[in-house]
Length: 537
Image (tube, rainbow, N blue to C red):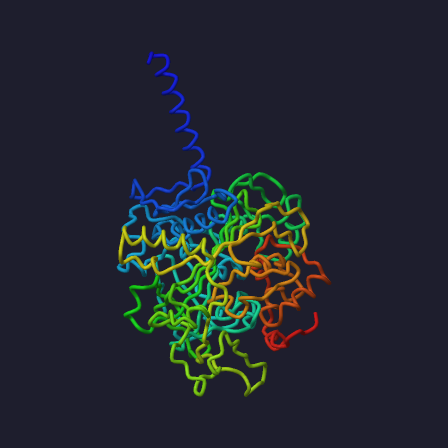
């Protein structure tokens, strides 16, 4: 072969290599990490140049519009966000951590990347935290307790508070009731009689968008939603502020996390869970206390440039609950967090009924309501789709090869929902928003996490008449300066109340996020009204 031909093919090969590098850099957010050649999962993601890696590489685009590709994206995001956090740089992975350390039980109490995100209670409060690196504070409602001076930060990032005190009754500290599941006003009690606690966190891209546009007040949100760009959370590319000026909030795009935790009273379970130290306050606790919590569920929603309706992924611990087929076929694990093999209908509070929804006490009610300590017999009604199950097995195999003790081999992808017809939100958009023709591996998009949608696993939600997170979030409004927000209303009534308010008032939309409705002060005397199901506006 002549020198000219050699030079020609050398040039072509170099060009192909550079194109591949550019393609990968557009899909992933590059991070510095210690492992130079990360382990790769042996699975066909049906996306050119995309493989799941045991590395803190956070995807910033949908790699291909197929269920396999989006599932791979979800697992890659899970790995990146559960990497050990950089103690000096919240929201970023520890550059010294290796793949062998991913989920190592010896490090399992160390905060991971998403745990260093901002808790929503720090963002929407009377004096919101203005610096991303500021340590997390305790909720305003904790000030009433005498032992508050004795509480110490649970990590380098400050406090990790999980409280069952309803913030609807605590005036300016208006955040979600962290033991109440969305749209049901019910709680979930594990078989060890511990409540399930919840937290919501925002990544830096979303935090910067909210704080730079001063969206912590209802008035500012309304101005933004009706502005030249509307209220559009960043997607990591070609973003703008509310006035449609070009703005850079980061390259990841907005990410919201909702996590479900349960207290682990048996220390022998620690090696099987991602665990964290948290300050908790349950309904039966006289004051806040520190506890060891195990992660049982994780929602990840991620807005990317080619997924304006977000990618919705949900993960669970493998020991949460069985399916009806598991029960009928005797294919049961030795134990479950939310299911009791030996449940006795004669002694069980709920007669061993599957997914029985506990009934809260209304204001002044002394009987006929359920105790927080009664376990719920949870069953997964929708089996994990085969595309998710096959990917789970492949990822577990790779994790086990890298570190056979990793706690993350005990977590599974349930499913993902993603928009097949992504479209931006126009200025002045009202609810319900366009759902982007959502796709998933589950019929009717009944994508449900047994720890967060226990009682809504097969619920059709209008106006989309489908299941899943997105069906609810198309109704997410901005905060109202004069009325109780939709999120609060549906937490303590029924989904039809949400629809009624949406149809009658057509509130301005908040880009599929309910966190914005928390930007309001709720008077102390509103708690009794919250207990009135279907109360008038």
